[in-house]
Image (tube, rainbow, N blue to C red):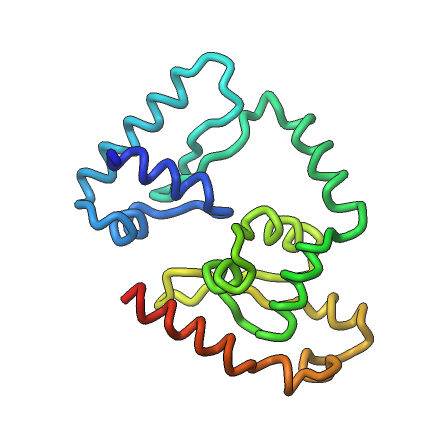
Length: 184
């Protein structure tokens, strides 16, 4: 696959902007190659008449976002997304985050077996989870918010039912470790 295609895929699945440095690490390409691919994508999205997607740039970070002309429609859609009940996949993801503590998106996807980007966005918008980023780590981690815990009437996740049993499941830990080893 061409580098621009790889970068486009990464930007599409990411729920936050990705820096040139991160794109360089993820693709194994040189900085100049990444910049050229980003220019190609910028030109491609800028040249598509009527495209609902644009490539937004903030400093050295890039993100695919909806076109500003569609803001009212997107806002209406997102509002309906966050005012209704949580879906079963949303509840499942929230439960995993509550019991596992700090967890990355790839770890969640390994556990659930499906892409969790939209679910994470929905949970973030609702204020049920928050994203943390350590400078030394490439991927952000997710955890439940104090508001979520307060809503459940507990002061920490360790007070959740069967927390000790469910927070560290040997088989699950083994699967996640084997996945990490495969990636290295």
